[in-house]
Image (cartoon, rainbow, N blue to C red):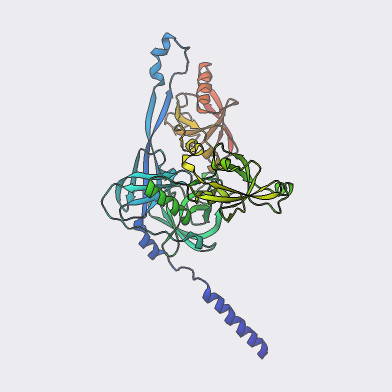
Length: 468
């Protein structure tokens, strides 16, 4: 009996020792939130959206005398669209960090600090990592926050998010680091911190803090099936990776990334076995850009890059991040697997922003123009890749409803952001298809139209509509 008591006593001491080393659950985040709130800002932007109006149901052949008479029925119109996001101050002079997608294409940017608004301009933006640096147009002084070491953020650590979800500024949520090094296919440099702290639309660009009040991430994306809002899966750009880009944007107004000039793919187990590589590792070169640094160094399609500048390339996704963080112009050595043996190559690293690859990427496509469908009293735009990925859609073509007027026959039947994919069994691939099909139906004298749509819950439905 005494022996059992001794064993129990020793076990109790050991367990107490383990609990004493564990971090205590915070009793409250109130002090932390009060300290950080003045450094988190709300961002609102406005941009001009052009709408092509086609109010007349008939089309005239070129040169027809009626074409000039009815040209006013096809006049373009403009309207202002707005969006909301979050950000945080990193300098007393009003330098603000946010996501690039929050301010992309904006005509005007307003930054709200507490209850006061300031106009802001873009100092620099990086679409690759989705980061933008703004400067408020004022001589006022502000309370900045500091970046922490995001590499020290461990799965299970407490984190706090502050932002402007759905326009509700000054919203504080808490959670933990759910995972590290997440690749969600958003950018070539994906290395997100995953968190279950509630993040919703409007949180983009806001900070993710550790319990020391240091920024360990920039809230950027969420998984929200059917636009359902936060389900506890949010993603933040790690502070360490973001800080390097921010320094370049502040100092140069642009990024300066290393560039190799190759297109790569994963090395599968089957590929590794076929080329007699011991295990599936490295980055397989699918193609080499003409006159790129890789081309000049003799890198060939089919090579497997195993090491870059002394850093092991364990998977394909490691290479772009390592290359981007290497100084432009540096001479580096690569170890590649070719013809069943290891080969060493030396090359001078180029600059991504000077490459044709980057220039093509940076050339922004024309704004997704909206078209007014007069007979339905709605405006629509083409479905985009962003729509497909953000909503996890199973379709690749259709048109998104952007506006429904009060007199529309769809007013009580559909909602903005619903997607029209068919009209009377005719597939609708783009906005002009919908306009032409509806105009043809009206011309034929039909009063009823059968629509096939995808609603906000990603469910396909058929809808009978009586035209006005």
